[in-house]
Length: 413
Image 1 (cartoon, rainbow, N blue to C red):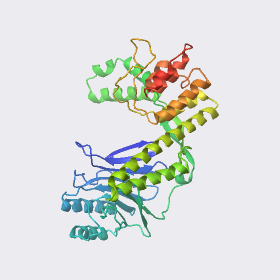
Image 2 (image 1 turned 45 degrees about the vertical axis):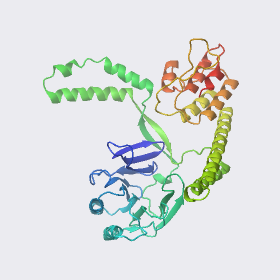
Image 3 (image 1 turned 135 degrees about the horizontal axis):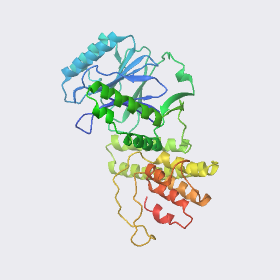
Image 4 (image 1 turned 60 degrees about the vertical axis):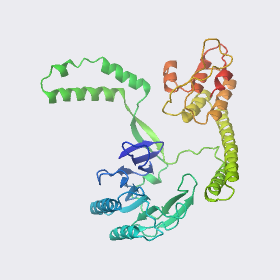
């Protein structure tokens, strides 16, 4: 199992070692204290793929399981029983089981009766009794929590077409969830500190380690030296964490209603056999119009944010960092921008989200002010290294007082 945190969410997941598809994932908001539960059983590809966490704040175990349609059902029941036995022996926390088990709860087959028998041994009940994929109920949520209210949500986001949820009243044993914000200590892993750490380590000779004949003494000396420079170069900072992330102002009620309309058109095309081609044509046309509306709303919101900000340069960089991806794709230059000098190529394009909205915002910055743009205390090389998108290069080029050909660069984003 793999556990990581990103954008206010803790993710625990299991992926197949040598295949792209399959696996399970559990996502928990960071204001809920949780931890992974390792070594319950060994996951088996196709038969029993799972991940498990304990939500300490709610006193709940959550296990997400995936089973392929033609896998070994007896092995699935064996591992499920082993997990439940270990969890019930550990403490008295409630248990929630969920996932795509490919066992139809509506047919009352022998397989489902065996599954139901094992669940009843641990006082666990299946809460999903309505179709989740066409006319079958194979996505299940089961728990030993009383007075649970299950719900089926028509999403139209995958071939299963629906999402499932349960609601229940639980006791929270910590005040952390009721706070609007709290503070955490985190390491300052900035680019400057990383270069400082690398410079310090490269200047060491480690002669005492090589000259030592005792492995334990050599390791302890290396460990102490490494920890010393690590603590010096990466100090801890007090960071404010908010329980509710700020909402995007461009997501209006009209856009939400349009998204609901788009999903209903997708389901109409997917489920109805009549007028398939016409329904698909209407869905694609509506999707294209909605995409243009969203990009226009993002452009208006980004421009308003820059105009209302006291530091417009910093506001532009905030928008760029918010919309730029973390991993660079392979660079491929396919065209040469019109208006550039002969022999010079246009800047390489990068993977960039919501490019049109950010492009318009950068144009607004260019009209408002031509000055030094970038995080305070960083050099031009560091800014180019940190943010390599074409928009960042356009903004950084404002340092020069000579005219720049912004339109030629922005036309190939």
